[in-house]
Amino acid sequence: MFLAGVLMSITSPASGQGTAPKNDYEFTPAPDAWFNSVDGIRVGIRLRGQYAGTFKEGPHRLDAGLWLGTFFPDYPVSYFVSFTEPIPSISGFNSEGNIRLRSSIRTGYHNHGISFNKRWQPGFEEKNYRELSVSLRAEKRFEDEYVLYPQIWQNEWLYVGGIGFTLNNNNGLGRYRFNTSTSVNFAGSVDAFINTQVDMQQFIPLGNGFAFRGRLFAGVSSNTTAPEYLFSHSFKPYNEWDELGPTRAKGTLPTPWVRQGIIHVEGGANLRGYTNQDIEQLNDGVAPLYTSMGAFNAELAYPNPINRWLKGIPFAGLLDFRTYLFFDTGTSLGISGLEDNRVLSDAGPGFMLNLNIPDYLGKSRGFAIRYEIPLWLSNPQTGDSEFQFRSLLGIGAVISL
Image 1 (cartoon, helix red, strand yellow):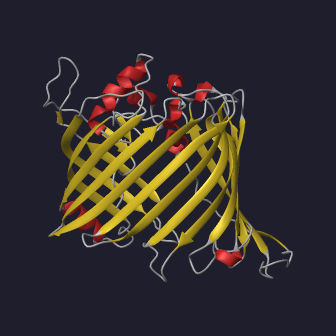
Image 2 (cartoon, rainbow, N blue to C red):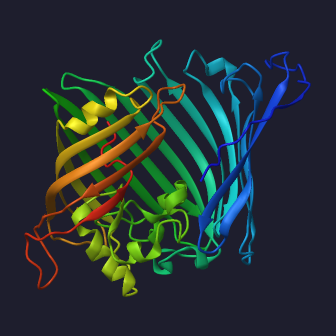
Image 3 (cartoon, rainbow, N blue to C red):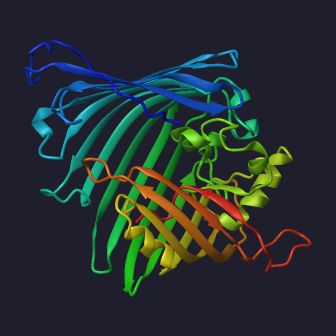
């Protein structure tokens, strides 16, 4: 949890070399704390560095953190560091090309890498852009104590090459987003594997406060893929859980709630009504993982007085309270080894509180909390009815447009 505090500036003379501005390089530290059941309260400092007045667009940008676990576990010290260097010859206004170095050792996980990133944006239209990323990284889970279900991880080094592409724009229906990524493990003691995901979202305003949001997802992995890269019915692949603070380690989200199957993390096939069934298998020591999965997720939003009230309050306009009906359906694609040939579907009402504070590039920052009621499942557990009260507390927006 980020702690508010008075930020200080520590400046040092700039080198004056290359394209660096002649003003000072500025370090901005801030206290930081988080919690998980292994580290306890993890206290430390976040540090950002940039040339004064460049507003995250100049050379030599630094983002780093150093923490100490107050429970003093086997590995009490953790860190994160990211260093970004723009490439002037391929950069323009909000269309930067850069090289980024990242390294972290935290919550029992090594994650180190280098990436080339390029963004294309037409003029001042921050919401319409294309992004390409090519990366090399090394990853290793070295401490299972931080994860609730060790069976969904392996503990050898992975050496992964990745490529990702994102497109945000408008079409004749409304806003859309297309994202695809491919990861290839090419070295180390784990067999080589390839993992590809495609995610497309479409927003269609219907008028009078009604809107349709749709999402298509497809993911395919080779038969030798490490378990943390495989797909489940309801969650994103588990290697992606390390990207978010609430899901990085057990205990940040209440463990009893997770084990009861009432917490859902967006991503992947996202058959949210099957969260409880996935969790029950995990509680039994099984790993309900598949080498391929395809899904369609839909939400029909309808107007509500709470959202209109929020929009009328000064400074509360960043909050969005959605009410909607949802429908999910999906199945394994049948083109690789570990499959589930059932077509699974769910439907029900949902409510979401979304806080969005766009960054200087127009990208969303904030959080989304959902409460959803999968009243209907096509394949309920033995002894349950297809129509039955079930509830979920969701982390993250399923369809973020």
